[in-house]
Length: 178
Length: 142
Image (cartoon, rainbow over the protein chains, first blue to last red):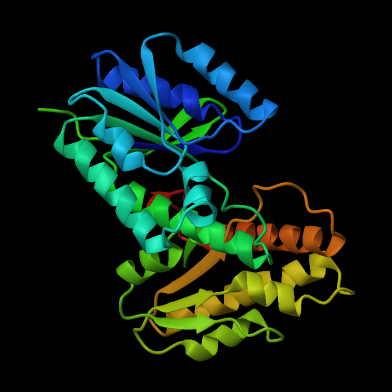
């Protein structure tokens, strides 16, 4: 089961995503795949706040780039939360030798692996494409790349949720198991 | 008329192309009135009008009153719908959602953002169906 959760800043994406993981898999531990690297105080605060709210039954895997290797470490049938694709996309573009195509392929193989092994993977990302169109070429490249990932993920996902003020709007609904 | 609205690279083009594979695509020309899109109409062929934002950005007269500008495109939308009907052609309009960011510091950018939003509202009001496109998925909003 693949779920894609996105929304604006502080819309409650992480909470919705955590509830999703809990609902989809009762197995413990649950896995938190962090794409963030802690490089300053503000980021440390954010990480600490999120960790405290998740509680002890989550195991953290750090994956600034290798989300495929992180998902490979998740036990078959367990739930995992990948937080977040926005940061991962920027690391693919600006902190790796990967091409955009290679990034897309890496995401595709990660999703495939999760699906094959029955991992309930919930992916969180930010909606940043409904602002005034930027005339900065680099920003535009980033928005366009992130959107390619989002479209790919939404097509692959069983369920797609938009979070608004902590509420989940269903854009694509998973079929109920028979 | 059908309206497809969504953010940058949200998948609007593909969503429209999949639904109207035979359509003529009409890029609005800066400096020309909206009704000029009627030149793209052909009997029984859907017409997709796009690049509204670029058209607005390039052709809005800084001296013209916004209400007057708005009345002009409202009239043009009416005429365009009528022309499409006469040609038995589906009319599809693609517009950008750009109103969900921080208010721009620049006055011109603010005005353009407002105009774009009004255009979207006016086009939606005159549409029989409106669709919100997000990450390649399509949701009916009218």
